[in-house]
Length: 309
Image (cartoon, rainbow, N blue to C red; front, top):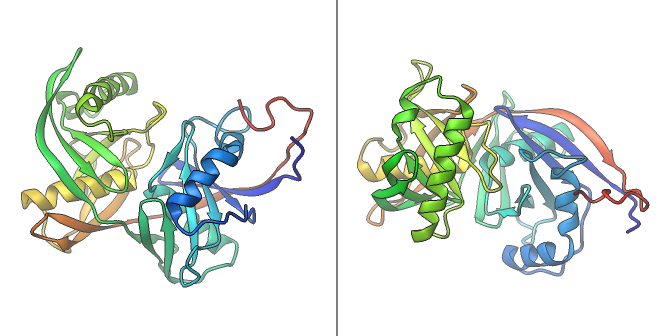
């Protein structure tokens, strides 16, 4: 397939990479983000595989396709994706997109409104170049659901939504700050397999444990679709965690929650009520991204892996 190529900007947010496609308008005749996603998935999935899969990409990388907004009142629309498919929302990715737009000189400090598959997200570029995102309404649907695993016994889990669906657990292994990554992956993968038997919409697992730093509130390890783990504290996972804390009365409106990721980097979270009777919240997540690449993707029609493996 002959193609003139396209430009991507690489960044990382708290250690987790984002590769953002810019200036590549697919001219999709869509009137909703769901319709736009269906068209991208059916006709343009090669863009996804080209930049997040080998030989050009990495299994851990999240991609973002920045497109003109469906509603011109908004800044842009963004479709997030990874090595196996598409994401409703991506917190670290949104922070990376906003920093990318700042790097390109296309936005100034202030609030941007971004259309995503999960809904409208407000993102505020702050003077120090950190980004505060106001995520979509988040909520919990099950508390202390017993999920059986082969190697780690029965673990009580919360099932919650934060732009993606999460199984949140506090397994005993997370009490050790030095648990090897392969053990965490094994536990999270076993939880994913068992949880999806009852909650097939769940595509992320969040293991929660004590923080490394005294100024933080907790530490997490997040398994993403495609069997990769999030290097950042995970924006949608932190949103789901905030929904659980709010429902349990363990966090007050406007109170800060410092969520560490597996690398020790942190996001600052807080919430307001969206519907207190239904225990739905509007979470906010603050973090910082760093641009580390500006690349022209070349598509050689003779290369069998030009669009990814």
